[in-house]
Length: 397
Image (cartoon, rainbow, N blue to C red; front, side, top):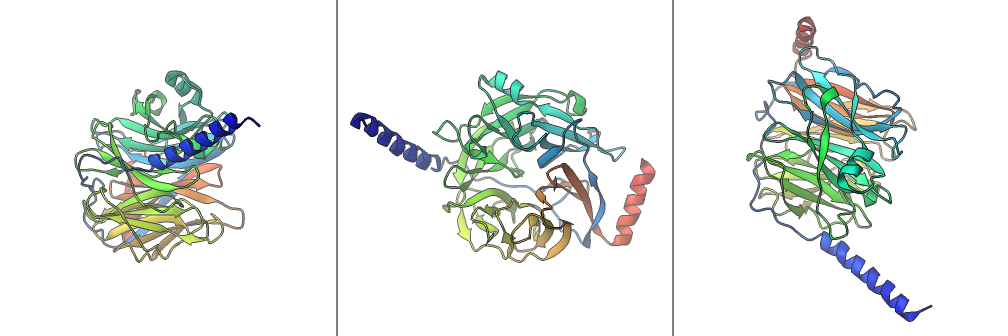
């Protein structure tokens, strides 16, 4: 074998390792961020959290597989209360998979028919390069009430070779049949062709109208990062959350405007939900002890409603995804069970949850058997209060 060829291979391997290391360096946002509570939240909610409604979101015609939903709350003047996005098609990773959307109507209290809103061929043509797979959409509403989607897109290779594609709304968000998106950019996060950064969990809203988007690196070593955006969706910087190399899919929970927790998936399997904490608005993070909640390499998502009121949806089974639980916490350390969201026998799957706070209700969506997206709605108060509210909602329809 030619020695010069071996030398080139060695240099390539060393350079690749160097680039992977550089991708984990800190790219600091301009100043500490100040988080805000969800609209309509911010004060502790008394009473017990009760499930008041549940169902399945309609699927696009012909789709038999669905996964990885995200929820975005629409502003009060809109006839749309809530939107859901997910990827659907014949199976995960198939060539026909697209990003689907459906809307929950404020007046009728029903979901619209689903529509595909992101197609890999159309996005690839606009970007000037091919896209083989689409997945893991995350939605955000900017200061102009325009929807941004952050989608994992792959070329050659699997999900760990994906890149984060930032899309901006172009069509009318009031009517899902008119909703369209165009690419803003592939997120510039790595010197290795921006490869292997992915998204999964909802962003943390900021007082300046911007947000912090949790993301993660997955090729080989696995680590969590925060991406900072301004009120118009312009990228401002990146900070690594933890030095550990086996953590994925962070979800952000605020304890105060500058004190946040990042809860993370443990890729090793058989571990617990991992935790890091910042006290200066995401500028610096420190690892803290894992939660006493099992995490068998599964996605967990959380939301903070008020000081001392946090919620977490996660898989609690030690070896599978057949039990999905909702837990609550006052301090971020102790997490008693609120409700088992869904459970089934061996081989069942209820996974990849999403949470949103809308008009006094907690909304939850999740993957149901990889065939559909299920949803549930919860309210605080006594069971009698909640039954009366549900009856009033039905009377208004």
